[in-house]
Length: 65
Image (cartoon, rainbow, N blue to C red; front, side, top):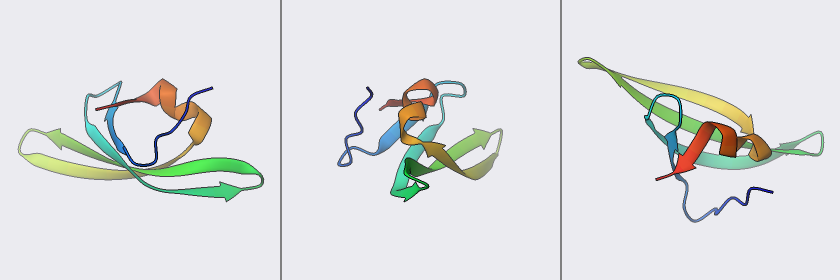
């Protein structure tokens, strides 16, 4: 099982290479989730996406920076 180091919350998106950060953890219906902020740069613009993801699925989407 993938272990989340709560002290090291800086991530890199595997699909886009964008920087991401875990904002907080929460439980809903006995399932652990993480709220993640993704900063995407496209040309001269910058976008921020907020995403909630199951803690067990973080390893498939992100890598520690």
